[in-house]
Image (cartoon, rainbow, N blue to C red; front, side, top):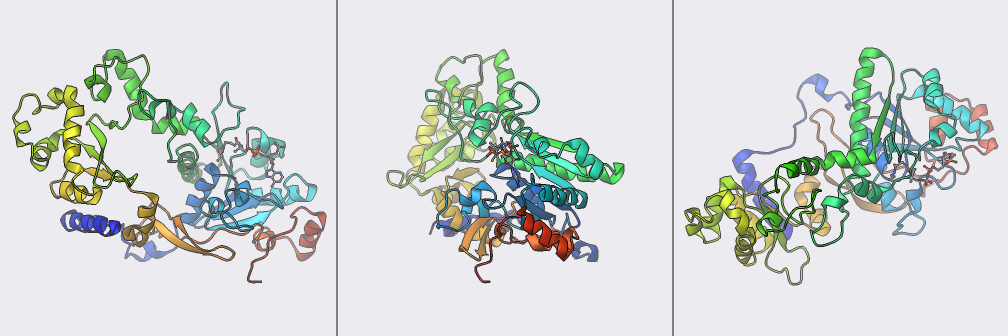
Length: 456
Ligand code: COA
């Protein structure tokens, strides 16, 4: 039911403005392969931040070889398992389109394999704790000696400075990067957000750095180091809050509801609840069913250019000319009353009915969509943003596909690899080890036991 309503709204918008995915080019050169075909990645990533980066590169066509510790592999394979003895959704949803080789990179035979991997790849991506790569013998000097074209890309918690040696996870980065201090309600504690801006956000930053380094290598012939620190990535996403920090020196932040409520500002950007960050007052309002449905809400923005339409829609045409309401500045001290009045109107309809009514007159609103609603949204399936993937031991599951659409590099999401599933083909076909050499590597224990496909 819910999804039907969104679809109806979307098709209305489409009829007017025609938003659509980039279309595949009809030119012959536009149909030849993927954007990053020919790029090979030595993927030494684990948990979330690094794997999101290499998954994106794989979706754009890079050959991503994930190197995992024999026995356990990426720790997320076994974390938050919903089905016993099956790779977790945590792992599968972050490692699509990759190949997996198991390797004890600290053993003598393992080091030989690693050297050959470095020599055959374009980019090494890692997100180990600070110093771990060096301790493995993979210093920048050593890598550059073996392969001067190699790009070495790292996620770390912090950049150079007092905290550079610290290990960091998602919420640590959200707190250290300014997100937590500016999220939540003024009278409550700092809050972390559900969007993984520290991990996935930094992976995205790193992917851009890698693609830039590949582009520059075309001119210089040299590889370079790429660093994306999680604190920096989060701060980048909190840019508007640093903007507000500086505006504070010149007076109160007038668009924050705290201004209208006459509550004095301190010396740091405060938490702003559900105020909009863009200078246009906004708030989350109840819709029909809010008493039992935790997501029966809508984000409503009282944008100045559509103020008159809002007045008409909510049955307050007199506000269009009333000096207390007609101009944005006059409205600021009355925002609570204004939103209470709009809410009395939104509560008479479902969030989808509010969306339809508002979009009909170009008032932007945001229905609070649950993960259930998003998972069931047909239009997201059609664009490949939500995909169903088949896995040999888990069966079918939903995942988020590539959110970035290129007209000449269409993403096909394939399942994550089993632990060590591609060890043999990588040792033989990619690295050129002979059968005897492979037997020696195996006998040394450097690759451990590999997981077999259930079907075999
Ligand atoms: N063969 C042999 N050893 C391997 C290996 C392999 N294939 N893969 C990893 N290891 C070793 C590493 O060399 C390291 O050994 P060392 O510390 O003795 O030198 C060890 O495994 C563990 O690495 P580490 O990164 O310290 O893992 P951790 O579980 O203790 O810490 C993090 C996890 C995420 C906190 C840490 O990696 C980190 O801070 N990363 C950078 C920031 C980051 O990406 N955080 C977000 C993750 S979502």
